[in-house]
Length: 378
Ligand SMILES: [Zn+2]
Image 1: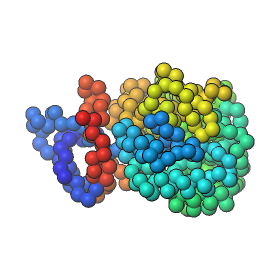
Image 2 (image 1 turned 135 degrees about the vertical axis):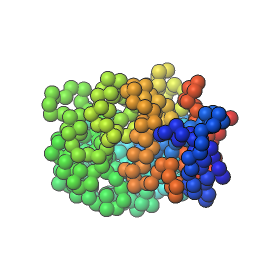
Image 3 (image 1 turned 60 degrees about the vertical axis):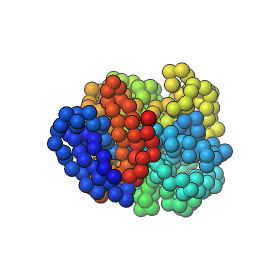
Image 4 (image 1 turned 90 degrees about the vertical axis):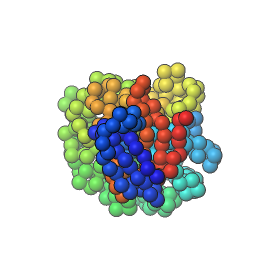
């Protein structure tokens, strides 16, 4: 199969041949009147945090294989060739069974879900940090839990978010073990100090999960998580670019300070790519208002987002003025790096990519997964 399209980074026309699901040859071709009308090509988006999508909650016990397939395909429609199904804090004794079930669904349908992100249960229970996670299910890091979830998930836990300050020594052991077992570790829902962040980085932590959210409304002037993360050696921090989780000015400030350490995530919940109404995030009830804000009914806190990944790239561009193609890397190649996946328009890589137009407005035309067209807007 051969595709002609414009490279998202350079704007130059490319001819790309694909064989057995990988890029066989990528060649620059001469500009011509024809090539100016080529659509754009860019590597598929990689979202490390999908709690739900298209009306479907990944945290609900009743999740069926039909629903799982709808969710995966809705994410194709919105630019994601890779995503991590994200499980928020739940009772300790329920992880094994639920991950076995998710792994069965995933194995029966090898589409864009590439594993699981466990956000909790080792999070900070302080009011600001907990978000919509339930305090009674939170606990200190537990090394035997790690063996259990790895086994139950078929070794597909790829990211775990923890708050290392709840027990520093145990957390460092936990991070080392998780990394050795093949999972990346993020810090999040946390008030870890700079010193603890630095120790966690040495132990192998790579990311801060949704920086700026799950944080107290009032923070000390100099000693606060935002400055500590910026000053740390943590390689990456994720931001939710919906304009609701991190307001525009803060988004610009964090982006300027963090530069190419920023990655984008949606933190999408069931109400994303669905109508306003009431949805679930596990046992929590979340109301999605007509503006797309997802609010937990009981507490009034944000409970995930309704952001569509493809839109996220252009919203981040609009908020910052930083070129959209740089944001595209922050939502594709860089998150893939965290998971150790070679992604991007390069010979030998898996041919999972988006074909899109920019005018009159950004529009995803087609999506290819492992060399196969799995979505077409026409
Ligand atoms: Zn969270």
